[in-house]
Length: 211
Image (cartoon, rainbow, N blue to C red; front, side, top):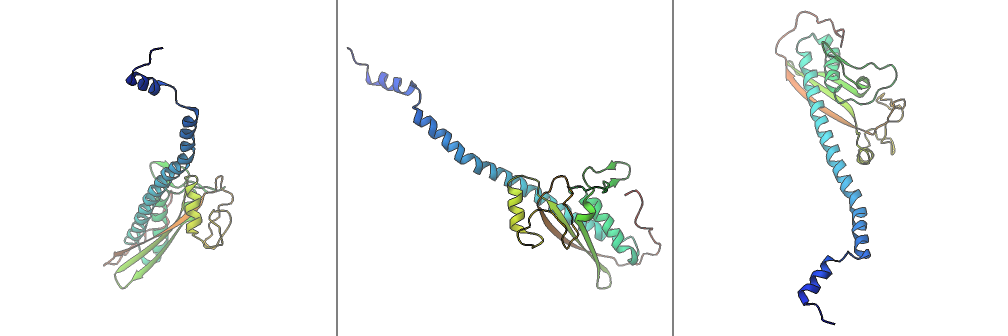
């Protein structure tokens, strides 16, 4: 029987089906690598979401400080709280019974924003004679699976043992037990100081209706 040339034998060997062991090793590599790749993808999306939320909370602090510049000192807290909630409503997730959505005049309600009042706290202080400082705290929901609970557990915003999920009342008054989906949360705190080198005479009549 005539033997095939060496080149032809090599081509036949390359075109033959893969051995069963090699096909199994490819599947094993996929099973081992896929969870890690998926976790990294979710982590990238979650951290991007958190960075966006941090910028929103910073702007909420600016809006709170800015709101105090057009009202009298006795209205600072109401004006700042309303302004901060209007900004943070766009990143607020989680509603319990009886919490209406925040509204934008002329546009309508912001879906899912009913919990923003529970999750947003504002403190206004006078700094010196002509400056106003607004501090805004917002509890932000980590909505991405797998990495959200991991980050929430690591941050532990309320320092109560291993409580990383919003499950019952704590010292902040943030109650999430009756929410449909209970997400882990992290707390962002932003501070903005603005000058007010003038005196406001008329009262604004706060809080304004329809917001």
